[in-house]
Length: 158
Image (cartoon, rainbow, N blue to C red; front, side, top):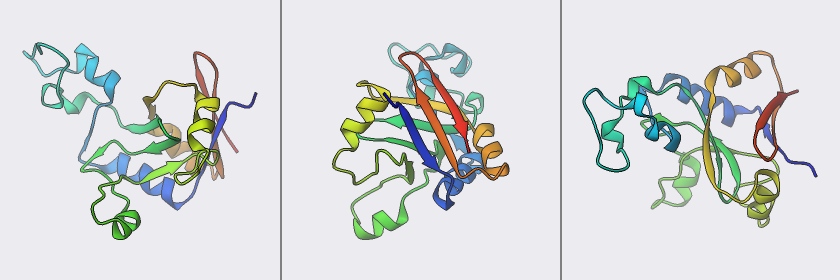
């Protein structure tokens, strides 16, 4: 079974990489929120840490690889990078700009099932290092592929 998500290296993905590289701060994902090394000095949260408990300077730059109703890449930069074209057509939206895998387009009827087949049933948000994307773009690659196994991911480009 082919368990690969393919991302086109296009202007949308370049914009997302640029934003994640240059945003004033980077928002933590769930794993980074739970890492005690990322807490501000002297903070001992009673439960799940909040973003105010996290020293954002400790959060590395990268892109979020998200799997929910599809598989997509987005910038965790703050302020967020919004999808202006979508918001223009849907004024009540605050949708973030995302680069969807070819196999799971944003408006695809079967994107949810394709995402489950490729990356499994659980939703997730994993950070991938920004340098990976910067290098792929600098190398002139046309696509970035992420292959999923039951317990790992591997990244390739062409």
